[in-house]
Each structure stands twice: as C-alpha cells, then as structure tokens.
Image (cartoon, rainbow, N blue to C red; front, side):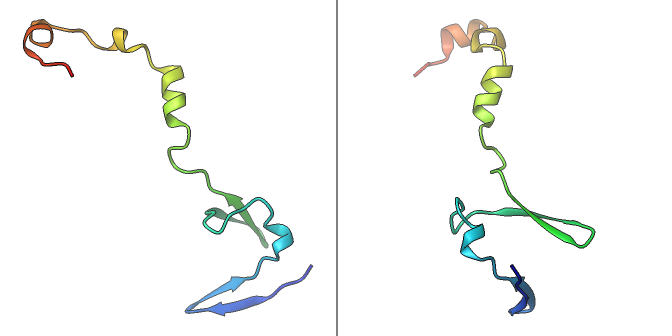
Length: 79
C-alpha cells in the first residue's frame, strides 16, 4: 500500500489507512522511531501503567516498612 506526505500546518504527516488501525482508539499515543529509512510507530504505554501492581510485588508489607513510635501510638489520631 502506498501513501504520501501531506501538509498539516507547519508540519508534514502521513495518512494511515483504517486497515492498519484495528485495535487503536483516537487517543492512542505512539512512540516514533526511525531505523534507517523506516519509520516505526509503537503504541506508547502510559508512564505509570501497572506501577501499583509492580510496587506491591516488590515492596515489603506495610508492617515491615513502618516502625511505630510513642508519638504514633499515643498522640496521632488514626482515621
């Protein structure tokens, strides 16, 4: 399939046929790389996607992380 560069404001763009866009939404962001004369588009992962799940796997339990002192136990109001 062939396409050509088109003017978009002060930039240039390429129209991507819908056959290539299956599974992507209108707000999908891509990382773009150049490899010689090839342009490579890779769907970008949200910066913190699944970071909570990963942290929970790697982090010690809350009980192991915090050491309570007299202030924590007697003066702090836990809600």
